[in-house]
Length: 306
Ligand SMILES: NC(=O)c1ccc[n+]([C@@H]2O[C@H](COP(=O)([O-])OP(=O)(O)OC[C@H]3O[C@@H](n4cnc5c(N)ncnc54)[C@H](O)[C@@H]3O)[C@@H](O)[C@H]2O)c1
Ligand SMILES: O=C(O)[C@H](O)COP(=O)(O)O
Image (tube, rainbow, N blue to C red):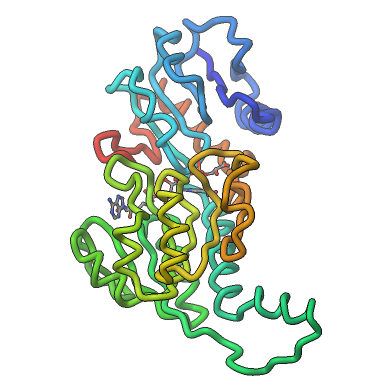
C-alpha cells in the first residue's frame, strides 16, 4: 500500500516530512518518480497531469492538497466511483479571512487614496471612510468565517448561496435572488467553488446589476471572472476597482491588461496557501481509513462539484 504525491512544479518536501512524522512506516511515492504504481492506493494531488490516474489500478482514494477540487474534477478520465476529499483547516480559513478583511479595510479606509496623497504631500481630511456593505457569494467553510469576522468588526454583511438556509445571522439570498443580493451591497466577495454552474459567473450581465461603484474581491478561482467584462464594468462605472488573487491564466501573463490598470490590485494566488503541517493529518487519517473501511473525512460530492 502506498500514497503518491502528484504536485508538479511545487516543492513537496514539507508534505513528505509531515506525512512521515505522522506515519513513519508509510510508503510515499512522488511524481514523476513513481516506481510501483500498482501499490498506490491513495493520491494527494495539486494540478496533476490530466489522464494519469489510470496508471494506478488499485486506487481507492483521491485527496486534494487544497480546499478546491476543480483541478481534480476537470480530469474527465478519473473513475467516477473513487472518493475525493479536500482540505478543511483552521489555518487555511483564518488566512483567507485575514486576506479578505484586509481587502475590505483597505477599501473602506481608502489606503490607495492616502498613498497617492502622501506621494503628492497632500493633507486631505475630507470623507475618511467609504461606508460599505459586504456581499459574500458562497458562505461555506471560508465565506462563512469571513462573514462572521466582518460582523465582529461591525461591518454589514449579506450572504448569497445556492440553497435555503435557516437561522442566518445576516441577510441571506439564494438562487435567482441574485439581483436582490447585489442591490444591497457595495463590496462583492467571490468565495464560490468552481463548478460548471459558477464558471464565468462574474460577468458583465452580473456587474450591470450591481450598485454603481461596487468593489470586487475575487479570491475563489480565476475562471469565475470573465476578465474582459471586468474592464468594461470598470469603464461603465458599475465596478470601482478590484482586488484579485486568482486569474484565468496563472502566472498572470506579462502582457495582461490587469497589470497596468490602476483600479486593480493583484496578488499571485496567495490569499490562503495550504499549510502542509496543518493539512497533512487529515490526509493521513483518510489514508488509514482505507484499510479500516471507515467513511472518509472532508469528502466532496462530485455531482455537486464541491
Ligand atoms: N485563492 C486562494 O488562495 C484559495 C484558497 C482556498 C480556497 N479557494 C477557493 O475557495 C473555494 C471555496 O472554498 P470553501 O472551503 O469555502 O468551499 P465550501 O464548499 O465550504 O463552500 C462553498 C459554498 O459555495 C456555495 N455554492 C456552491 N455553488 C454555488 C452556486 N452555484 N451559487 C451560489 N452558491 C454556491 C455552497 O453552497 C457553499 O456554501 C474553493 O473551492 C477554492 O476554489 C481559494
Ligand atoms: O495554494 C494552495 O494550497 C491553495 O491555494 C489552497 O486552496 P485552494 O486549493 O482551494 O486554492
